[in-house]
Length: 210
Length: 320
Image (tube, rainbow over all chains, first blue to last red; front, top):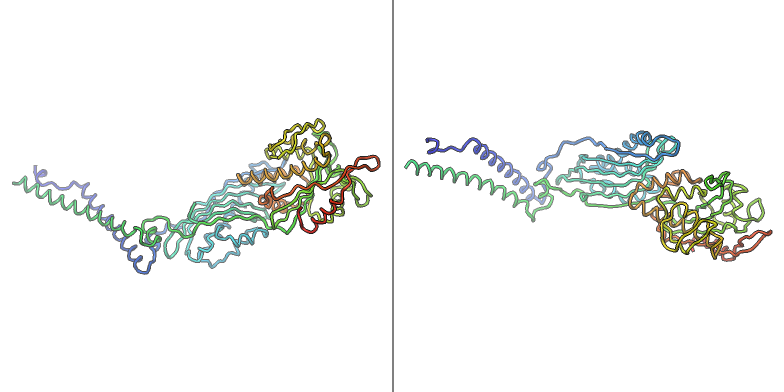
């Protein structure tokens, strides 16, 4: 009876109330931080208002198939032999185009060195479609996310000769104004150069629009 | 009384709940308000964890920028085709299909210049004979020298295949779409085709390339058809690569297996990639002007003055 006359909120409701107030406090704090910075000179929220996810290592997930000459290696074996070198090359590409490009201090020579000479001038003119491009100086860091590639390798008598690779890279770029996604979707036509590869042609898209 | 008091306490407690919930709602609404239009998009995005645009969308593509003009001699040998009962090696046979493929790489235009195989021309070290004999006399190198002397053009590369090779190439790439320009009923070549655009399989493509005896223009029609096959192959290649870029590797694999050439592999790859960007409509199929004649009892084709005018225009960089 006493309980009926003097009801107390059950413990569950206390917990809900506490949680609601806590959420409100957090939301308030977030709103104040954002609004304050906005009013103070038109600056957007810093990464502190959108906490940075832990930086993950760049790891290209590569699927390789191969075309082989009659009497040569089996297609499966050729693909397995070609894969490590391709993976290293794509890793170099994505580091040069995104991870190491942040800040814009590294320049683009490293990236352009991955292109075959007859296509290098075109690549230099189209860096925005191949890398962070003109956004690089404003980016403080690029945190790699998903990096996948599918390759069809033309295998010769003893080694890979060429490959077509579809590359997809998603990452997060941090700037003083905030963090946002960066994307690369490319088809690269590669020429084997003995110990590595060169990009002989490309069809590429970048930016935040997928 | 105690009941009313109790209800009053409940009411006050209820009001407190309502007030607390109202506060939460108001705070949340306030936060939403701070992220409504009017504030910089960057702040809005970051504060609610949405996408903040670091880089605008860009798209770009490129194929190799090669030297100004490439001249490629394509050759169909009548030897080295066991399936057609043609023994020997391709290089020691007679060159029965002869086209100069000229590509202006800067303007992405070109020409396929088709030579009648019976063209009666000087062959270095061998007097004057049918042009198709040059390869039998001295292999692709002598054939190239013969063309260079005849046209005054520098031949950069040659590419050579056989009956078997042409058939296999066409079959392995899934057929080649060609604008067949006449109804064909040629029992000698096995060509039975109706006029119109169609996809030819390997045997049909070879028959179209070989048919001569029943054609009104004889060797001239045949050499024009060979040029059409080359252009049809280019168009088919481009359509396939546009749908699936990995088809470049499939075509290169076929070429590597079926064609002999002095192109290095990097040059072949670059040329193939360049070919994806040269519309077939920008490549003219030009038969070399000639007239039927005879020499030593054999029927030959004597090149007409128009042929030498054509060579002069080609030397000057024109493609018509």
